[in-house]
Length: 315
Image (cartoon, rainbow, N blue to C red):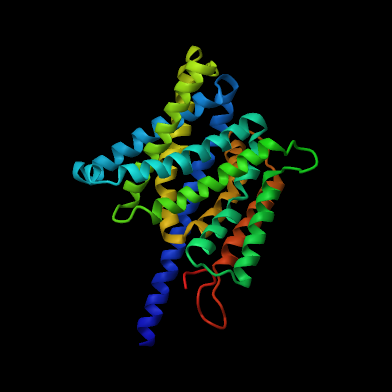
């Protein structure tokens, strides 16, 4: 009996480690989108950038899904429900986050994303019956502090106002969309869940682009399209969202949105590291912040010495 329990415990630990590495890989890919978006926003408007990203991302995810699972799975999918989740959670959420970046800086956008653990943990406590315990609470605090340090933002110097509020609302919607994707679409694979919700993102983007182009004349990207722009769009859409989103939803289904969201707070460090490889300088405070985030992630997944149960789990 004890041997069986030991084997089960070892397998569980291995699964948790793999899930965390999966989440890290997803966030690494997600981080590639920030520099690409910054370059695109120099020539394109925010509506054009988000539309190109979401449409190209959906096309890639859909093709992968169709190739792996076949046409029958595609036909029987919960398209309407997935579309609505993607539209409201990922579509509006991602649009508001990118709008924040266009109005402020990538640093402020990263800082807004760093607040996601608050919303993610709150959702799981309210909707899934998750229990907050001491170790997990300390983990949340470390992740938030680490995310703030890694972002390099200053609440006194940076313009944190309505624009930041817009971004925080977007982050809250993104957290809800991530949870709803794995909870509200039963019977579908993680790849299928990602595909149908991505259709909502793409659909909303096309609608917004049409409205902004016809009624408000707010788009200007069509007159400035080069090979460099297309390359940046593919990096942003296929790596920063498409493939990243597939692994993200898989990680959320295994870890829960609460723990998975912790990894997002290392995004500023990943962005800095990529820029460092391209010739920029090393920024120590971002490395230090990422180290604190990692410590928080590990701490939050410790077991209770009294109950021998994981500290943040369903009752």
